[in-house]
Length: 206
Image (cartoon, rainbow, N blue to C red; front, side, top):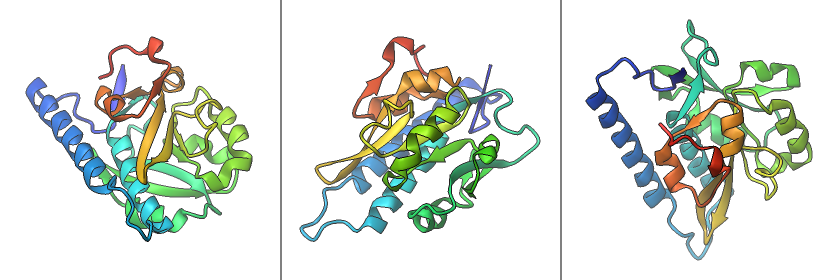
């Protein structure tokens, strides 16, 4: 049994389909509008991370956490970063306080590994490459959606990796890593990924 981040499991079937279609359409719009090639002057780093923050929001909408992974009595969904994350301001400005299925998304800066237990999503920018392997290893098997940027992020065991393709923000998915953590990534999101690894473990999505 899995707990939907959008908390709609008790609604009628048609209502669920409507919500899923709306989320899929909204994400497609983000891809079309924010994935436009860079201008001749190039896109600023701040703009790049505002786009990535928008994607992170939709990743939260289109992921199912296992029963018990989200605090049943709480109302928060926590996206964790390190407190010295260079992209902290862009992420906080874009994401903090946004609502995901009745839960408020909070950007939680962390200092110690022990704080992982409070995380639902963990983002590691390319500036965190030196500690990436150790962090992803520590989170392996835990119901935490890991998102990163380096070339070896998925091979290290991460779940979603951002990359730029002709000036557009794109992403790859390690479905095997998500399955091992009992996270269910929507089939709608899988269709939008540039590549998906670990497909043999897929169960058809939502």
